[in-house]
Amino acid sequence: MGKSSLNFDMLRTKIFEDRSGVRAEVYVWIAHGLVGIIVGFIAFMISIVEEMSTEWRTETVQNLLDQDKASSIKAYVFYVIYALICVFVATMLTIYVGPGANGSGVAEIMGLLNGINYP
View 1 (cartoon, rainbow, N blue to C red):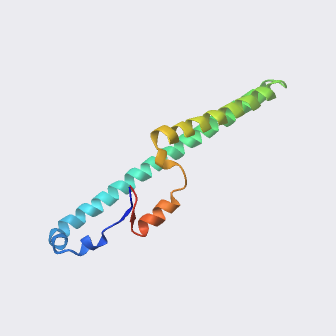
View 2 (cartoon, rainbow, N blue to C red):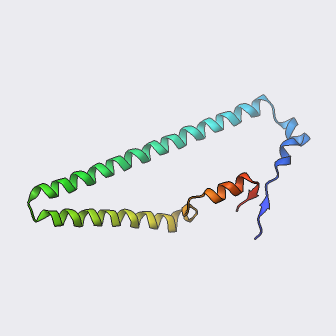
View 3 (tube, helix red, strand yellow):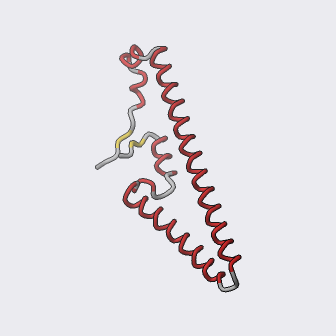
């Protein structure tokens, strides 16, 4: 399947200009505002969950270290297993839930901004 360019000239057509007005402009601003609020809330929740997870891991490792001398091996094993579980979950989510999330996305954004329509 070939890639096609985006049609930016549609914004200058007579039909689009007749259709647009103050009402359409208000709807666009409302949609942009809602998207910004929703994305901000999701980013905030991700930050909270990440902070709680890091704090729990640190406290658990510290509790294991405080138990006795032999528990340093337990703490190390817990730390490694926790990291492996996090990597496994992230890998499975990327492979099965959102395969488009692999990579940085910079090349796709640059192409989109240059007018290439990625599927």
